[in-house]
Image (cartoon, rainbow, N blue to C red; front, top):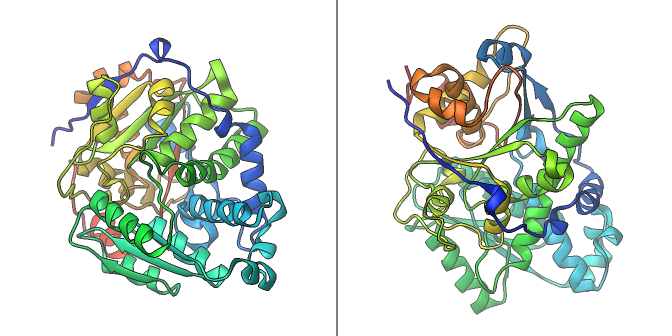
Length: 402
């Protein structure tokens, strides 16, 4: 089977410099300190895949395995928990550094806050993070999921005491519905996308994701290593913006080459980069991709300037590439560690593997400057959060890529 990637290259030297102070190391330190206060915190593994790197013709590959994050099998709780913490801090007139986890869930804080209902739209991982955080705070959470969402993911959200239903709409229309309910009923909307008039909480979510990036940076720094390439998957672009902003800020003019990866059925950032007309270009329709966490059609308003000013490459990929990445990580070469990664989490691994081995992708590989000197950093953002789907792909061979 011939694999086809679509690439847009972005000349960042011609872009206006963006203010990255809200994604700086100082902010990352504050966010990491907040997350470290959680009883469930421990640093997720940064897995080195030496044998795979040798096989593919790269110097090294590192992948941050977020399947261990807070026992929730995905990274999303980082953004949701920090945002809810920051919201509570503002409501109480405190600095978030005065609100470690034990204080935030205390009876005294609950008494001061009263009853709060948090609402969000999700494909699964973000909503579970919001539901879990609300559960810890003894508050309420309402979660809506787009059409086609897995019942397994819905049930995991409900297990945290949240109200959770699947709608008949796509992700973006589900977001709009949640926002209407929030405005009508006084709920607190905690959404990992932004639009004009709703940008403060999404900015906090982007900052929350920096814990993952900062842990990876500190681990590599302790080994005197610096990545030459970062591949990061994107839905609306919140995670991609947080990771891009952090590494662009901390490495400055020595920053790695950054490539955004999206499913070809929901490539709104790729589409926006390709148009290059200072407008955001959404993707509409059902966006029926196995990469459920990336099935988002409308780019994040506050994140796009960060991406446009600091990302060199935007890639649109087929379903089979994500499935290939899942199999590569789930069936490691002897000497490498196994990483259980879901459809959205493994997309970037599939990209790197196919770029290095597929002759039809040789031109893109060259444009991305991947070779035997490359140190590649990836983020496996979820484990097998949809086990039936994971089994069908990794065990049973769905979405083959020969």
